[in-house]
Image 1 (cartoon, rainbow, N blue to C red):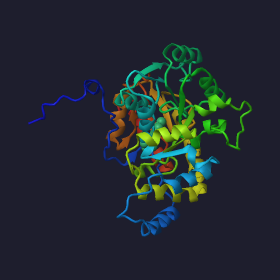
Image 2: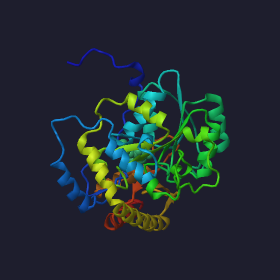
Image 3: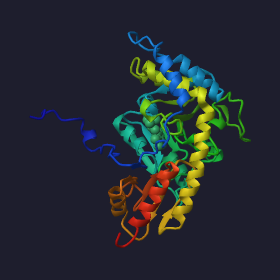
Image 4: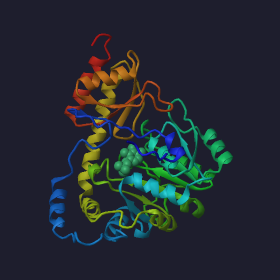
Length: 372
Ligand SMILES: *Cc1c(COP(=O)(O)O)cnc(C)c1O
């Protein structure tokens, strides 16, 4: 018997977040890294495991991890908040600043979890579309912000699932128009040529942007990052934000006590000893992304330029969902975005290893034929 207790009425309207976890040989659907983490990191972690006091609660403030991240980004640890994946970071932000009667703004197509988590927290969502090339439509952005006065404005740079990063000038423009926080989701930030982090959150000494932000704007800028993609650590669930210390305190107020376990804290802290290995992986992915884009250019698909570890494409000769199914039949899993807002007929493929990319291209070539 099912419990005859109705769930929150506003949740009944909400679709779940589905990324099917199917058993396939070539998994290119979730933008994970195709590579295992560095052996040296694993060795560090094995050693550390013996030092964890498993009978005790973990360090609630995650101080050692935040100190290491602070060193990486050249900011004080007080500007860093860590949580179980960047999705929990986003949830804490929305719990702290969203809620009933408040609005979050976003620009679709973009990462669907921004809308989803906003709605879970009872935050109203207002949105505007993008240009045909999936860039921000700045007049539409300005109009949305002025009309709705959102407490949070989400940007995603590079944008998932379309691929382009926002320039620092664009982020600065949005900050100048937005009344509240501007949250830049940089899940793929290590792959992009620019980062909102370069704008500061002062004091960031490595500011390379000519137009340093006014203090008010800088204090409203939040950059969100994750270990799930370029760090090859999706299994660990670790993300963080860099922001004004007041934002960090607000997020700490909404997280559950001891939400970040000792193992994850150690895993993240030790990963930062292997920044060079991470950069090597990023270089490999960028090279493979180029190969993938070149191969797609030869096929009957429309594609968009990407500064991340995935490529969005639209089959021109065969229905997108049918292509997705034909790829799956060849044990290649990509993301079917064709029912997402603003992405009719689109699929997204994650950049894999050279062998995986070859298999994908061969399978796609077959799938795009009239009679495969
Ligand atoms: C993959 C992804 C994340 C990662 O979320 P985690 O909870 O850190 O695994 C966040 N934002 C975007 C835009 C992503 O594509």
